[in-house]
Image (cartoon, rainbow over all chains, first blue to last red; front, side, top):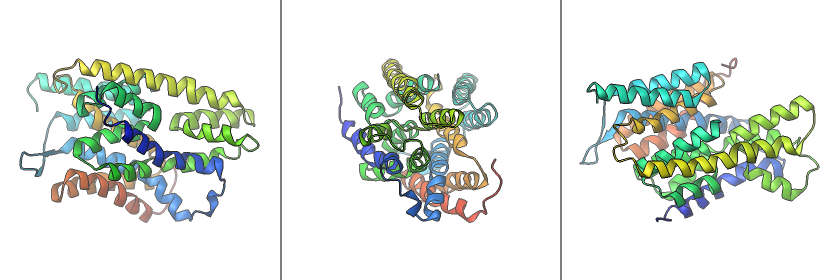
Length: 110
Length: 213
């Protein structure tokens, strides 16, 4: 059984723990510039949205070139996002997304 | 319930999308213990992002914990250093939201009010569900037929929505998505994700702060 990614888990912990601990162990956070704190607050939505978009609309060909792919995943992801916004339930959104993808492919969509 | 469902989906996706072994998926859930960052790492690995770059992206994605940690600090005043050091490892979106709501309600720190949501309601179910998900995922031959390939982008989109509290966050998310796609087409998917995550917030900062969404 592969353990190749275990060190990556520790690496991710090593870069995450300080951000979790800084306020609790060294409460001098107010020294950080306000602009830096505002930037940090916006990183989460931006990076997650980038991951969602790239993994929904981009595919990579055998030659390594990226291209836009249109498929039922667009609808599935959009419905998930709408449901999470409306019902505040990620699980509900994911279930709907999977159901749409299964149904769409059953009728021949990509 | 959220930790159970999402942990299961994480394990399933880690296995079907990036071929994580049960040990690797469990190590992520036990050691890194950061839902969104763990999910994102699957995408980075599939896209061929290097480990140092994954570390930087994880740091950026989890940087919001700085804000949680600072907000919790006044409640933990007077608690021992070892307790605060261990508490930091269990600081997640869920444990922060539940414990701060509890402290505000009762007007003081309550050890059970932190440790119960952090460990019993989040850490334990998250890890058990991860193991279940990665085990079930190993038995799935055609994940695309079962719609499992859409779970990852849908989860990322849903998690992004959960972090949007105002128009700046919304602008950062939209910019991140558009920049991510554009740079992916021009350079590579890896560069697209990094560019979206780093430049998107700058666009958000350009928007004047407004009312909460």
